[in-house]
Structures are given as C-alpha cells and as structure tokens.
Length: 342
Image 1 (tube, helix red, strand yellow):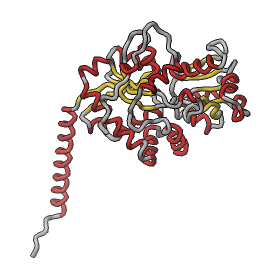
Image 2 (cartoon, rainbow, N blue to C red; image 1 turned 135 degrees about the vertical axis):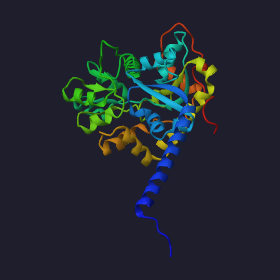
Image 3 (tube, one colour; image 1 turned 45 degrees about the vertical axis):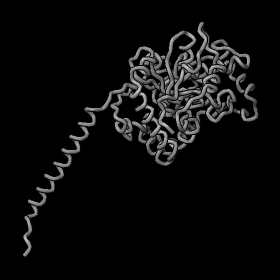
Image 4 (cartoon, rainbow, N blue to C red; image 1 turned 60 degrees about the horizontal axis):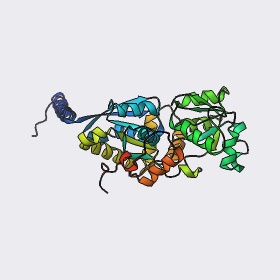
C-alpha cells in the first residue's frame, strides 16, 4: 500500500520549497546588485526618441551588463549638457548640436553612441498654417512662419536652433519674425496650447506631435523626421555623451552602457511588435493607436548600431554654424570606441 502524506503536509512542504527558491533568487539578485557598477544617466525630458533607454530599463539590460542605472530627467538640452560638463552625470542623452556649441567655446564633451541621425521633432501647424502647404516648397513653407507663434520644449534647445537655421536660410530672423514659446517636453501642454489658440505651430518631442494630430488640433507642416529638409537627413542628432575624463577613467563603464543601448535598439527597432508593446508600457495613458503611430514616426530616426562618422558631424556643423572662438576638431567630439564589435 502506498503511503500518502496528508494534504496539509504536502502544501506545507510546497510552500517551504517555494519560499526557499524565492529566497535563493532574491539572494542571487542582491548579490548581482551588490556587484553592479553604478552609472548616472541624465535624459532630456521624457521623449519618445529615448526609446532605447526605456527598453534598457524595462528589459533589465543595464543589469545584464553589470550596471546599476540611476536615471534622471531634466528640462532641456543645456541642462543635460551641463550635467555632463560638470560630471554630475556619467552619461547624458543630449543632442550633438550642444556638443558642437561647447566645442567652439573650448569645452569638450564626447558623443559615444548615436541614438538618432535625424531631428526628433517635426514642425506641426494649425489648420490655417497647414492649408495648402502640401503644394509649397520648403522656402515658401518657412516664409509662411513669419509672424507666427512657434512652441518648443526650451530656450536655446535643438528645436529653436533648427528653427533659427531655417529662418536665416530663407530670410527670416528670431525673435523678430518668429516668436518662440517654451512649453517644456510634456505632450499635453502642446495639445492644450493649440486648443486655446496660444500657438500657431510647434516643434515638440514625440509623442506630442502625434497627440496634437490625433486630437485634431494640428498637422505636420514640415516633416523633418522623414528627411524632407535635405540638411537634416543624415547627421548626428541625439547622442549619448560623456566627459572626456570618463573616457580615460571609466572606459569599461561606457562600454557597458553602449552594449545595453545596442541590445535595446535590437529589441526596439528590430522587433516592432515588441518595441511598440514596451513603449506602450512607458506611456500607459496613451491610446494604443497613438502609441503605434508615434512608434512608426520615431522609428525612422533611430540608428541600428550607434555608429558615427565625421561626415555626419560636419553635416551637423554646416547647418548649425555655432558661433565661438575655437576651431572644431571633429574627430575629438565623438568616438565609436565603445560600441560592441560587429
């Protein structure tokens, strides 16, 4: 006759085994965390362009590469740049134009991963501005902005610089001909501003542009993200940047960060279905259709491998023409040294 343990005893042993397994797993996780190398990462706002960062966090890719990431957010590129310059952050998600602006002033920050090789925002206009724009040249579109109120995340940020470059090329000036309005990075601010007729156009981070369009408050006026403006088609735009001291003192840390972002891009861009699902978790209040559209818009600017070239760097400089007293040594402003080997 087979001996059967009482059910309560079996349950008790099962619970005990489960508890022991949980304890072992927790112990292993704690041991891994204890040995993880801390890294401070500062990001400009909460934009869809930083999808690789969110995926790396949600999929625990930093932990996979032995890192414990402390991620913070600031409003605007100048603040992210300052965090890198002062070494308050090991890594800053910052547009390359800020690196160039520092370079002509004799200050050095180095990009080591290219997140986006085109602008991270389109110019969105209200119905009056966009009416008939599909038949206009770029020249005519920019000139139509004269007298308009154009919103953007921050003063001196990449959006305002791009607008200034376009304005100058086609005979307009800031702030005389175009009024800048600063609304920060959060998407609802742009929907509300269009709804209340406080602005005529905007260069917001996505998903704000998509939300404005889906709310019926505006449409794409100038599509920078799909390459409509030739000067912005293949440049260094959004990058991971660090202080030169970290290149000397923390090369393995930067290598691990680049590896985590590379893994994240493979998931985000290589598997659109999974990428959309992960971004939906990052923006839980956004409708699924809005998230899908934002993904489709932004995925065209994400790079596959983070690699940078001098021609891209020079292309960025050519359209920006930052003012300063120092010549730019382009190879010193970026490095591919920390990218995973192909």
